[in-house]
Image (tube, rainbow, N blue to C red; front, side, top):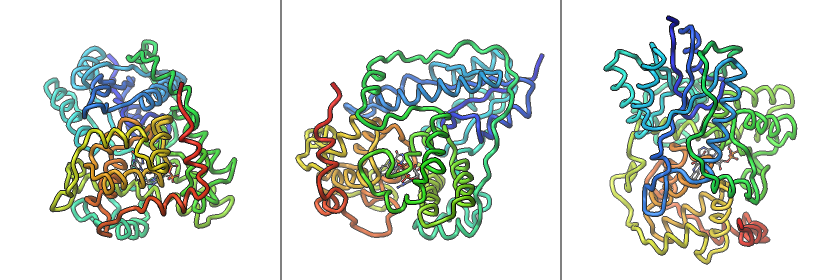
Length: 431
Ligand SMILES: Cc1cc2nc3c(=O)[nH]c(=O)nc-3n(C[C@H](O)[C@H](O)[C@H](O)COP(=O)(O)OP(=O)(O)OC[C@H]3O[C@@H](n4cnc5c(N)ncnc54)[C@H](O)[C@@H]3O)c2cc1C
C-alpha cells in the first residue's frame, strides 16, 4: 500500500509558496488535498449577522475552484468535505489510509479549537497532524523577543523586526503531485443569490483564486508601476488603483505575503526603491503585527475591554446599529462607505477607520457588533486584521494614543472634499 498524506487546506488556497503542501509531497508517495466546508459558516452569530455573507462565500467558491484546477494540472485535485472537520477529516483519513495530516497553523481561538478537535480525533487512530505557519512574512524564530514580550506598540515592534531581517523567501509551486483519483470538484452550497448579487457589483469586480491574485500583483507592480506612487495614493477612496487591493487574496491565502514581498524586492531592483515601495512593506508589517498579537493575547480581541483593564461605556442599540449597517445614519461620508461595503464586499482603509470610529465613539455601540458585521461582509475578512484593527479604533487595542476619535467632518473634507466618493455610492444599488 502506498504511503499517503492528506493536506487540509484552510486559509492557504494556493500551490505556490505552500510549505504544507511541499512537506506532504516530500514525505509521502501520494497526497490527497481537501478543504472542509462547515455549514455553520453560514449561520447567524449575532441577530441579523452571519459569519459569512454572500460576497465572501462567492469569493471563497471561486478561490476553491481555481485551486482545484491548479491541483488537477499537477495530477491531483481538491476534495470538498462538507461538515465538521473533526468528522470529515477522520472519515477521509480512514477511507484513504492516510498516515499523516498536514495543515496550516492559525493562532486565532476558533481556528485553534477546530484544529485541536481534529488532532484529538485523529490521535484515537494514531494519525499525527503536522502544522505549518504559512501566512506570515517573518520567521518568528528570528525575532529578538518571544510572543509574551511582543511590544504593545507597533513602532517598537517594526524597528526590531526590520533589524532582525527575518523575511522568509517563498517556495516555488510543485511540478507534480502523485495522488489517487479525486472526484470532480463540487462546492456544497448552491446559492445562486450570492452569485447574482456578486456579479452585479457596481465596482471591484475581482475574482477569487491564486491566478487572479498573482495577476493583480503583477498589474500593481510591473505592469502599471502603481506601486511607485502607493504612499501618495493609499488614502484614496474611489476606484481600484489607489491601493494594492491585495487583501482579498491575502486573507484566504491565494497569494502569500512572502511572494508579495519577494516580488516587491525584485521590482525595486529593476525600477528602483522609494518611499512608496517601502510603505507597502510597512503595511505588510502591520498585518504581521496583528497576527503576532494573537500569540500574546489569544482571546482578548473578542472581549469588550480588549487588552485594557476596563471596558468602554458602549452598548448595543438595534435601531442605531441597523442605520449604521445599512448606510442610513444621515452622515453622507459614513453612509457612502457602508453602502460601498454592502454593494461590493470592500471598503478602503480610510473608510474602515472612519465608520469604525463613528460606530464606537459617535453612536456608542460596542465595537464587536461592527467587527462581526465586517466579518460577514468583507471579501478580505481576516480574523487578525479585522478584530485587531477594530479593537485599536475602539480604544481597547494597541493604539498608544488614548482617546483617538476621528473627526468625521474633517476627514470627509480632507479625503472627499468635492463629495465625489459620497455622491458615487449614495446613488448606487443592486437591482
Ligand atoms: C476597522 C478595520 C477593519 C479592518 N478589517 C480588515 C480585514 O478584515 N482584513 C484585512 O485584510 N484588513 C483589514 N483592515 C486593514 C486595512 O483596512 C485593509 O487591509 C486594507 O484596506 C486592504 O486594502 P489593500 O489591500 O488595498 O491595502 P494596501 O493599503 O494596499 O496594503 C497592502 C496590505 O497591507 C496590509 N495592511 C494594510 N493596512 C493594514 C492595517 N491597517 N492593518 C493590517 N494590515 C494592513 C493588508 O494585508 C493589505 O492588503 C481593517 C482596518 C480597519 C480600520
